[in-house]
Amino acid sequence: MPVFVDEVVINLEVRNNPPAGSAPASPVGAADDKQALIAECVERVLEILREREEP
Image (cartoon, rainbow, N blue to C red; front, side, top):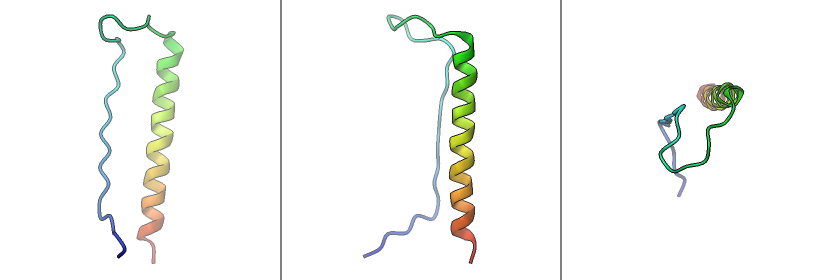
């Protein structure tokens, strides 16, 4: 029996400050790299969803 997904919801929370007791903060450039990676992932997911909607 096939399962069809009508909607995909992605929630993501990015924080610049680590929780107390965790490893030291990463370099400033690492935050930019994370944002770029997140943007690329979101773009790819949206592209896949657009392709699925095409007849």
